[in-house]
Length: 273
Image (cartoon, rainbow, N blue to C red):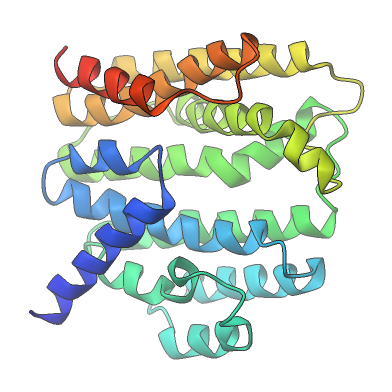
């Protein structure tokens, strides 16, 4: 097996391990879109795992994220420099993070610079929030935080759609889509976050306020998709949104998450629509 094929196989395996929400829709995309979105997702997941890591202190996270951001800004990603950067944390960081250089390698030449740019901005923004101790005081802060951790995914995907077949989408709506998905995660993990002393909910907000914020942004995702006519891209975008909306409904009903059966039914309904 060639190195490129082996890397692609590894990427697919790690994608399956790391993403419940995006793995299925990525597999429904046509080549080379499925490989492109897969590698782009893994690049962002690589930096996200640094921010989320419970074993690393804030200063270490800031150092790793800012250094990674700088490396991603270079015309040619310095894979050796990155390996040296993360090597002291080999046992604490997951494979998806340690192999960032591999995910960049399998991203097509025509779009890889966009993916590196979005991932670089994400890493720098996450570092700033780590420095601030994730202290979210108001809606402006929440908008800023969710932009860096999820809105940029929407921006990156919009760049990929345009590269692939000229599909033009609204950048602000793309950010809203990402924000909406992240807000669902915040709702889902509110108790768990609280137990480890972290809150992504603005001061004075009730859970109802967070539901309102979430639904406002998920409505932007509906608007975002009106610009998309390519069937496989539309399928890709509809599945995470439908899962997010069903999760919001379940949370309002007092359930922690939706069942595997619900996920399978939603996916099949959309595929057969």
